[in-house]
Image (cartoon, rainbow, N blue to C red; front, side):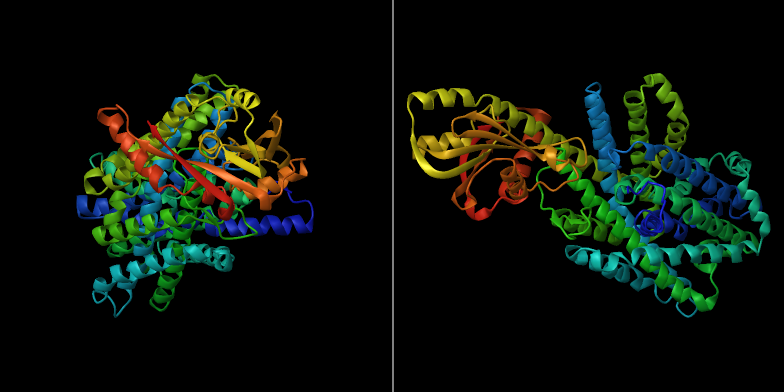
Length: 632
């Protein structure tokens, strides 16, 4: 049964509900912790701008938040975007691959949109842990007896929690992951209960259910409208996780969790916070924690800290998954990717990404020092990623559903317009820290651009290499000595003679009894079936071309592929098999200006990329590397 299939038996129903519970922690962890700061930051503009808070303003801001959740999360993501799955997988790069696989038209535009979305996602991945954990720890400041006494240790406490979170990534989350759903279930139920208690203090807040209230507050404060919208958008941070994690849980369980639990609890809590401020405007400094009675504030801080750690874990895991997709699709150099669970293919660990993220998060906490300051930097990366997903959805409607491009654009225009308004609102934060995610995104896009340019140059260089057909003709005329065993040569295309093969012939003047030209390809699909993974084609006497195809969500494993190839008739003795890899020393050519900068970045990335033997899981003890210098 796929996760989306309607359960028709008790066993399937249990699995469906387990997936829905799991999605509460992983998918909704980020958006579920937004009540910690979203309303506080939104109402702060009116406190600063007018010096007073009127009832219509509070109701209007709550209305904007509720309808933002409905339009962007419920309608766009839960109802619409999940329909565009790449064989069950979601996410910006998955959607990009799906659109590219449907048609070669506008391939450059599709690639550019996907790169921008991926870059902005990494910016979000650095900001989310920092603002989430800080906002939870700041709750200690409202506890009676600690007010004004603990401000100096909030940042150190947050740093200890965050560094600890990154340190344990290497061990995987399998042991504690099964607690994520139940903990977040308790969190959402707590949100609802606190919200109901708050609503009882001022039931008139229910007027926020009318969208006209939101329009009125913007018209009443035109000079503050963009600032208000920029903070209101914090309500939907984490919405991209709905789509990105679809492959892990399926759209059905994710939708069920949203409709029955997440949205009702979020709505009740925001309404409760609004009602609290209506009844006592002095509570606007931290309305979330002040919703709780004194005896429950310390336990609430502990629960909020657990929820924000889970939300951060979900974002970090998403960054690892995004990295694997980017590497497999040729957007980033090879990196170390370790599987941390035998049962769940989606649980991986990327050490380079982990430590870079840890340093970035620590720097953000030390620079901004509070969740309010970080809120100014937050939002741009999230809304930017949303805009890119909407644009790709337009192309998906056009290519996959056969809609005219203009018609597809018109159908998605309401979301694009709303997200563009939020984007403009968030751009006003650039001078106050909003440049941070843009700088991170720009750095990622620059690295991707350099890597793709360099790999294209390498591909062109390989086209200038000797053709395999010419080598075979030469060997037919002057047969070399034949060494016992098999030699596997990794090559981008079997039509071109691998550099390692040519060096072996030139220096050793021998050819193995069996030569295997191995090409590893990545499909635009997330996974491929075992039948599609291996193809074998005869090239000449004693020479065969072996092609292994992996999905962009798969871990490329040559050893496993060779085992599969043996069942398909490729006979060889692994103990008498050597793997010959080409190690190229790159030298910058005649490029000038910005192109030379890209070449220099590519050379640095290539030198630091994971060795092909490690990345493709080739037995290191049987690897022989032969080098050559290449001008790019």
